[in-house]
Image 1 (cartoon, helix red, strand yellow):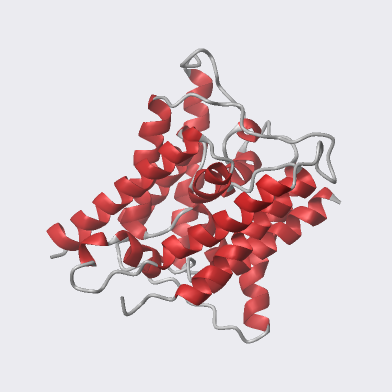
Image 2 (tube, each protein chain N blue to C red):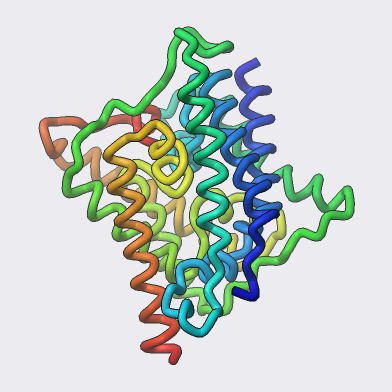
Length: 141
Length: 156
């Protein structure tokens, strides 16, 4: 477990939990990135202001990190653009169909002990683990 | 006030993803790669991130029970309860895409700040996927007891 970083993971995770807690207590909203982002894409969408500022905060965070000299990693994505596009489309369609992603189901939903979210998280984790097993150990070998 | 509170929440969320390392697709894939457990190459960090996030938000949810949020007149909580086919199919699709690249919506959007070309491609494709889903739902009659919920009523 050479890459295991439990302390930074716990601090970062606590901040994510704090964000979800604050958004619920202050605005009464679920901090699910899929729902927040999709609401911005919907031409008939309402409540655009708070959605837009949440997304803005998400993007501004690493910019402020760069300003204070915190090393922001450049994402390594060593697959073709076709694969990236297919993956993006699957994530977009899938999260809308199941109404949530890692944040909405995985954190907010489970924190509220929603059976729907527990099932969704189990299923998307299993699917992701299966895909990585195939791409890394069957095809990638 | 709501927009400002939400800006702060997005900002804290972004720092959380950054500090935890979850903005790195390689780190996420390192968790999903459970076949690497025997060789010692597995990275359980994502489980710690989720546990810490759940501890803070779950405890807060249990302890703080106001009748209304501070800046709104009501809570906007998910209304859907059914564990149905769309939940399964959507989760499988999402998991497959997540496993292919190691990006889910939060880190993908946050990584736009790095101006990484593959990230931009991913986010555009993700937006297209979301819009395609919503157009498809609008065209077809609402499935399962007509419980077609708008984005704001979704789980997240």
